[in-house]
Image (cartoon, rainbow, N blue to C red; front, side, top):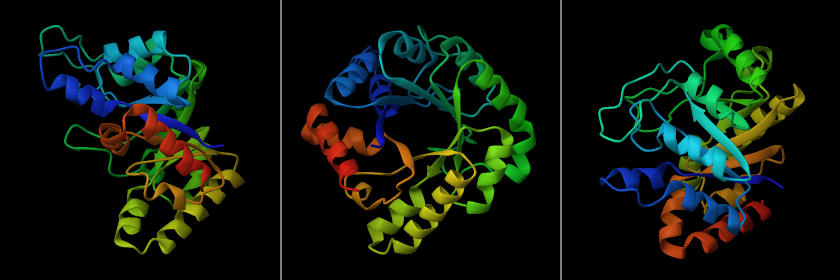
Length: 252
């Protein structure tokens, strides 16, 4: 069965809107796990707008499922300008310290509200190779955030990745518009191409209770869901929202 990994960025965003420690990220992670989530995902950014470096450290020590840390591997250290908030040490330094089960590499920057494209490995493949080698030496499984391009999957393997994460916004937009079959076909082709060259397949971005049951990707090992889950948890509560997402995965 596909693992449900809950992204806690929006929980941290709510906390950071005030000078407070609530909602508590670790406590919410534990609630999600108790309800059936098989993994926890966080995407700390250098400006620490939501998940902070200290959250990653606390999650590593405080949960008993896989921790997936996402981010740009080329993000440098940055000093914090908020009282009581530790500096951002840089993505690679943070991963070296925390040693998550999985590191998902994403080509994002501060100017992006959220992740909005996958890697172009014709441009970045060569410089990613030593990064991926180092992450694997630290014991991390490495996943690359990728658009659904079948021809790029062999390049992801050649760069050293263990998995790819399909960036699913195009599918989600097509599903919301009521005409998603062509988009789904493209994602299925990319997943098959990844599996053919020995890569595991993850998926994430704008997947929700409406479109997840139709996301027919047999190769998919893990989905990462954050924004939509947070919205649904406000409506249904954490335990019921997790149950609904697990049911949606089972219905695929």
